[in-house]
Image (cartoon, rainbow, N blue to C red; front, side, top):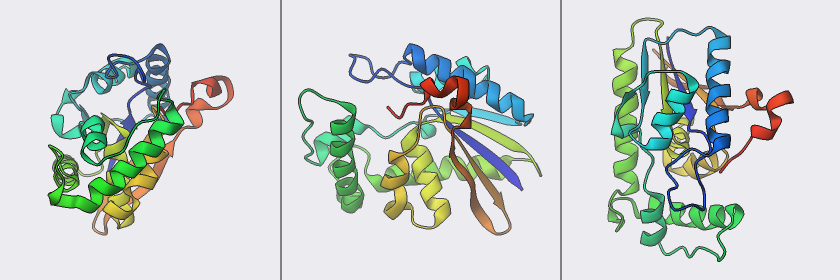
Length: 213
């Protein structure tokens, strides 16, 4: 079976003018995640990332040379928030932001192709699924791939593996931690979620690095 490892980007710069930039903590998380992957001794025949700065910089800080593909990019959360009427609390705090985002995501998914967003949920799911399927199909027998991406992408693929992509997406997306590791395998029985959101590398001496936003 081919295995695809998905790593969420390190902590971005929440609340700053440029969100799409790793914080100092995010850079350290990325390095620790890279160390964890090397500790496991897994050899990767393909390494990919999205084109967003936080995704590319996570790959680099983790010590991997990744080929960028925009299909691994996150959905536009600002567009989703604006398109589905959720109002952000002032001042914006992580917990209030998450509640507003969850509400908007559920409306986005329900609207499907009827969403006013630039990228409806159906289009987002289709591009993420296509990127994953293409990568999986190109792996040699027993080969492994590594992708540095975002929480929404990981949540969508994990939900797909469980068998309810739109229904399970929001709950899984919500709990993805920065630089967590998810493992999916493909084989004759289809797509299987083998490990989700692993973050043991942020325990013990690195416990202060565990973040979700």
